[in-house]
Image 1: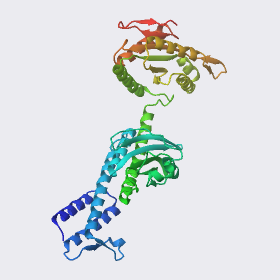
Image 2 (image 1 turned 30 degrees about the vertical axis):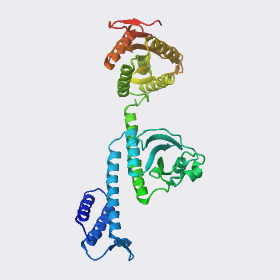
Image 3 (image 1 turned 90 degrees about the horizontal axis):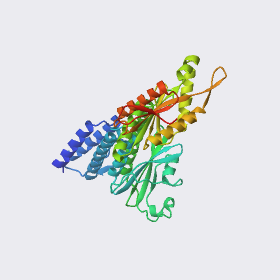
Image 4 (image 1 turned 60 degrees about the vertical axis):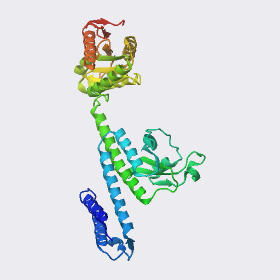
Length: 410
C-alpha cells in the first residue's frame, strides 16, 4: 500500500533527476524506473512490479526492494554531483588530489584509508593520502611487485578480499581487512592509481565499485586538467629564449623568500648581473648569434649554482639570482666564484676566433639594504649600474642605510 512518505520521496527524487546533468540515456532509464515504481505504489493489489522494460523476462521485483534501488540510485547521483563539483573546483594539483582522497573516504563505509599515486615513466610517485582518523599525506613506498604497481602496469582493477591470506601481502601480519586498487585512466593510458583499504574482509559491493569507478573517472580528468594548467602556468613563468624563469617568476619567488626570511628571521641575498660586451657581440654578429651566446651563458651559469639558489632572466642581458639564507659575505663569495668561473667559459665567434664574457654585478641583502622586494631590487640594480659605469667587470655591494655604494675586494 502506498504511503505519503514514499510518494513524496519519489517526487523529490524524480525532480532531482530532471534537474541533473546526467547523460540522456541514464536520465531516461532512471525516469522509466520512477514511472514503474509510481504506478506500483498507486496500485492496491500487488506486492511486486516488473523490472525495467529492457530487462524484463517475466521477472518481478518486490516494491520495498525496488524502492531501495531508487534510494541507492539517488544517493549515487548525489555523490556523483558532489564529486564532479569538488574535483573541478580547482586546477591546483595538490588541491585536486586532496579532494580526491576526501571523496574516496566518504563514499565507502568502513573505509580505513585512501592513497593516490601518480604514474609516469613506469614509476609511481606519491600524490596524497587520508585515513579514517583524518591523518593526511602519510607517505608509503609502493612495493614494485605489489598491488599498486600491478594495477598501474595492467590497467585493471584489483581487489584483495582478505589481506591476511593474500600472497601480495604475505608476511605483513599487521594488515587486515580488504583493499582495492583502481587505475586512473586517460585516453587508454594509466596516469595514476587509487587504492582504498577497509577494515572488514569480503571486498566491495557492486554499488561501492560503481561509485569508486565514477570517482576514478572524474579524478583522471581532474588530474589531467590540473597537470595541463600546471604546464601552462610553468610556461608562462619561463623565458622563451634562455629557458630560465622570467621576471614574473622572479617576483613570485622573491615574495616567497621575503615571507620565509621574515618568519624565520634570516637574511637572503639578491645578485643582479649584466653581461659585459654582450651588446658589441650582438651588434657585430647579429641578433641570432647574440641569442645563442645569451642562451649558452645562461645555461652555463645555471649549471654552476647551488640547488637552493634561484636564477632568472631579468631582461635583456641582465640575470638575477636569489641566494636564500645568505649574508653579505656569503653572497660576495658566491658571486666572485661565479665571476671567475664564467671568465673561463670560451665562446667561438663566427670569424673563428674565441672570446669570453665577463659580468658586472650588484649585491643587495635583506634586511640590510631593504625590507621589501622592490627596495631590494632597486638597491641591487643601483649597485649594478654603479659597477657598469665605474667598475665594469667587478662586483659592487649596496651600503647599508646610506644609499651609497662601495666596491667589493675584487
